[in-house]
Image 1 (cartoon, rainbow, N blue to C red):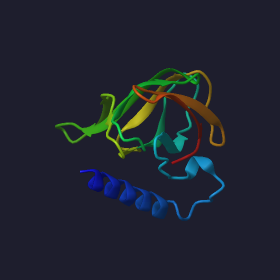
Image 2 (cartoon, rainbow, N blue to C red; image 1 turned 60 degrees about the vertical axis):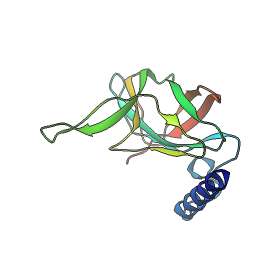
Image 3 (cartoon, helix red, strand yellow; image 1 turned 135 degrees about the vertical axis):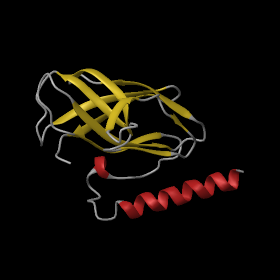
Length: 156
């Protein structure tokens, strides 16, 4: 079983490096890499939004550890509420969203938060978020503890 875990991890690394080949190696936020023994947060960005309204944040979480972990909290000073949401299609064919359960990250797993899928809703913004700005998020994991990340605000 260990061989298959290592093979899966190696394949994940290859896919991540190939997918970021056109990005600058000097931009740490846009790099995809698995650091063994760590939870890594990469490819983060947030949509613009006006004070009092909502925005959304997207990122990739890589569990480079050999143990499962789970995301148990999301914190930021730019919004009164930060929640994990998922998009879904209802019976009438309308795309909507609702709060999602906190994901369990298997060892070596890569979870992408992206438009149309799992994402972080930032509700009741405390200030305007314009393209070119940045914001800080703190993600709390059951095992790895808190991880801070700075996300650029940009148009999709």
